[in-house]
Image (cartoon, rainbow, N blue to C red):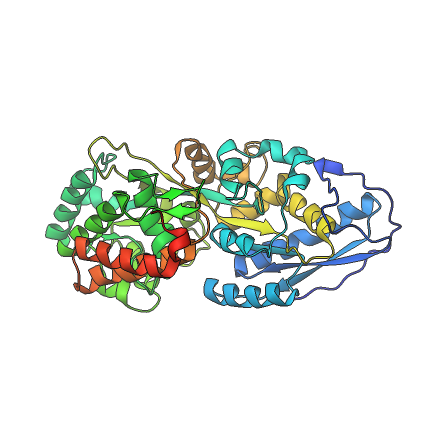
Length: 447
């Protein structure tokens, strides 16, 4: 899918239409035609960005800039992407603009692979439209910003309202996990199903942390990471509380443990049993409305919005209020080694503005990190995505830094001990602390 096109126009001074600006940050413009590369590794993103590139090139031509964009399209898993882009960063051969998950940024920025974007963002009026919580979450431990968010959303609990209603199970917002577990037991007694899926175990990879454990932890305990010192407090009480929850769900046979232990655990759970109504509650993000269960999703659910609704995560402790977990989805990053940072930033700004952003959000089933496109089509015609954008205002998020990958690995391993029955919640927590301490090293563990 690599594309090669050249627009022959004279290069003049930068006149930025639609608020697109690029001040030099170490990767200045050449006096002539420039070709930049952008990397996409998810098929949905590959398809939509390929459609949007000609519009960017045309807009640059109108401004007197001769910029050609080559799309580096390589469909990969997250781990394959991590391996490939790391090798390219080390060799200084990464594309000029790289679309990646926000969770990758702390490690790559900490290693010095990513260029700071602060100067660009300060001079771009589009940054003013970003919601304050996303601006705050974009600041890394060293006080700088290395990424520009292109998709966002809310993680919460999707549930089969049609099935629960037919069973006579309460579908109002559960205030506590005890209340929700009582309902899940009712479902199990009536159907024999394992009624809830939370990402867990090693097979789910980083999603066990990003989509399962961390949202539960963040609603209970927001002090597990100290941004000032860049250290993880492994003794913070939320860890044990979440491991206890997983253990209780497994002990009550409410989690589909065997499915979670198999390869590709999302397939039998989210793509088979939830659409069939045999799993009735699933931890999921905004993208589920489109990417998973929408008409063109992985496993469409007919009349989706009539059958499926969402709850916020219930409180895990007495006094904890129900909440959503803010999802920082994809971000654009510029490698420090890029020779075309200015042009790459112009492309990032274009793709996160107006109709190009609206097109991406709808294609990805994501909410907008900006507050100024609710009336921009096709996003304006997506009520579930618009509602997720509203829900972001009251959702929880805890920014973290170096060590996130190691924490994710330790959480995956420890939750697998729960799934196999090798440990209860307390034992899994102890195993997690031992594993995380070794993986993080003394400099990243709060003493």
